[in-house]
Image 1 (cartoon, helix red, strand yellow):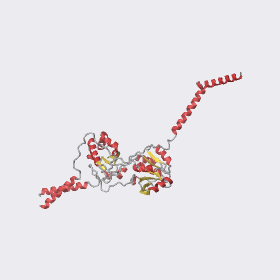
Image 2 (cartoon, helix red, strand yellow):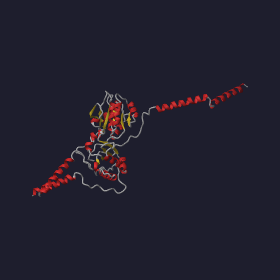
Image 3 (cartoon, rainbow over the protein chains, first blue to last red):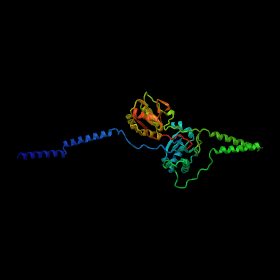
Length: 223
Length: 195
């Protein structure tokens, strides 16, 4: 009989406890709020924890890229000629492709590093566009009025100069080594390339003039 | 040859002289690969002009000076000026990283003496800052198979050349093996005309 009574008592206590847990009493709400607050504090603590001391990621292997250099009078592009070049670069897909394949540097005359290291080598006519290979060889340079206003023509000229600026073939004694194809910008158009600029280079005029002068002088002496 | 021909010859000679003289001094503003003779790449991966090299200040801001030089080299002038004005005095590796993180910089570092990290910094021409010499920080401006070149912010007018093995031994064992850099775009090589 005593055993039955103990069992009934235990059962009653269990039922009451279960009812307290499951019923939405003040005690249960307080308990849940306390748990929620604890969770919030833990979450806040996680958010406030500094980032992990070591984050491993792939460092860019971009040391062998070609370079496209745009030199403006003012990087704010107030000058119409600057805006023309910037617009041509932005509006021509092949020049956008060039930019994507090369490291693009934008300078103006106020840039201290440009002024100290490059300006005396790249001239003072603005705007200017220069394409260099990985070792610094100037493969293409155009400045001022010599920059084609047509983007496709500019892309053609640059593509031609890149072709002539590729690494030279290895000597016969050693096995031929192909240059890394992905490192050389490829601006080849899908259609037939445009005409090659066959105008005389700048230094041809003094040579012609000098020759003419020499001829004239010889004529004077013969007389 | 009559007088008219003589006059024409003189004019042509004068024009030729003017044309030649006007082309002296810089690359002509034409499509060309010409450069003045003697224009060669100096060789250092990080070759900041002397006037842009950051000297130590405030009696011990070598870590910040090295950081500012890296920022200037990679074209981050405004951040460099901000950093120069914001921080001074001694600095630890962990606080430097925390400050670069707080400033939103793109950076990379090693604190395990990993020589490959410095090699990468030089191979990509970004340069590095390292803890080197007793309680000091300098820039690594180049690293070859035989020699490491450093720029000490206490003497910015020249580079120090240290045998590679000695450098690595000291950096890894005596000075803790900490190196860092910022990850932006370094300037292109100095233009040359020869492939």
